[in-house]
Structures are given as structure tokens and as C-alpha cells.
Amino acid sequence: MHVLLIEDDAETARFIQTALREQTWAVEWCASPKDGLLKLGAGRFDCVILDRMLPDMDGLGVLRLLRGAGIDLPVLMLTARGGLEERVEGLDAGADDYLAKPFAVSELVARLRSLARRRPMVSEEPVLEVADLRLDRIARTVSRAGVPLDVSPLEFKLLDCLMRHPGEVVTRTMLLEKVWGYSFDPKTSLVQTHMSRLRAKVDKPFEAELIQTVRGSGYILAGA
Image (tube, rainbow, N blue to C red; front, side):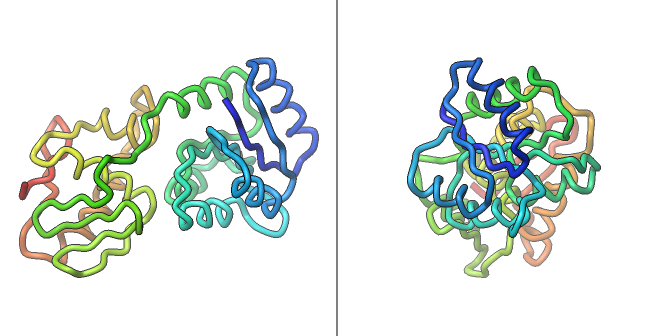
């Protein structure tokens, strides 16, 4: 696996490099966001480890630039701020996973392996359409009845997953695995919270309700 590490603390970077190279993984380190973005534009990587607190540009800013450019590489964000609000903010910005400092090497390696195993969120179809709902994977846009919808990167992933299974029940477990990469249930309201926000954008302004809750199971995108 080829990993790009964007971390301004040299000691932390050396620690991570040593740990990952023991797994026979290739690791390239950049201390600044600018160098990291240049590396991403010039090379091929399997995943990115991104520090939250960086000089010149916050890690969230880097992440938003990546997602805005359509770069779908898995991103593991590191932070010294492990509060719920910070984790949610990072996930909303497009992070695939979040790890608080200090962390155990075994956990870092396990999380990266999980990201590597995850199937990409791409579909063979560049544009998905269900009823009057349209998702363009190339332009990264969503619209309903011709009206553009302002969805976050994470909400885009949720909707992409639902639209690839129209008329089928998509369970909470499936969403945790496909969108967040969790192979376990963190026992939080993570899915419900983000699905509620998505439904407010997709359904609330319109007459027909497309995203429906299947009590005890998950969600279904009707209208197919």
C-alpha cells in the first residue's frame, strides 16, 4: 500500500513512517499542506493520513480541496482534539475515518487496512437517477426536479449508496460499512443524524417523500 502522510510534526511523522514501513507499506511524508497537495497531483496513492492541525491551512481545508477536486482517496484524519464535535466536523468535510492522538500503532494499522479493503464508492454509471432525483458522480452534484441540492461530501456518499440500491432496504450496518468504513456498530446515532439532515434536503422541500425509514432495518429509496 502506498500512503501519503501530511503531518507537520517531525517526531510523529517518523513514528508513523517506521510503523507503516514495518508493514512493508510505502510512505511519503509532507510537512506542509502545499507539498501534500503537490504530491497528490503528481503521484498515485492508496490512502492519505492527514493531520487536523497544520501550518498555513487547516486539515479540514485540505480535505475540502481534495473532495472539491473529485479526489476520492480514503482519508484518515489525525487530531489532538478528539471531541465528538471535532470528529463530526471532520467526517462532514469528507474524512473517511478519524483517529485521536495519542494512538496505538495497532489501531492505526487496523484502520488503514479497513480503508484499503473498502470498496470505492464509485458506480459504473456516472449519473444515477431515481424518480426526479439526479446524482452526477463526475460533477459531484445532486438535484431534484431540476433544483440543485447543497449536500455535504458525506451526504453525497449516503445518497450515492441509496441510489445504487433503489427500492431495496439499505441497512444501518451497510451504511456504516460503505460510508464510514466501520466493520462494527459504534453504538451511536451517527447514521440517523446524517440521514435526517439528508432527508431535510432531499424530501422536505418537495411533495413526494423518496427516502423512507424501514423501522428496525434501515432506509429505502422509493420512487424507482
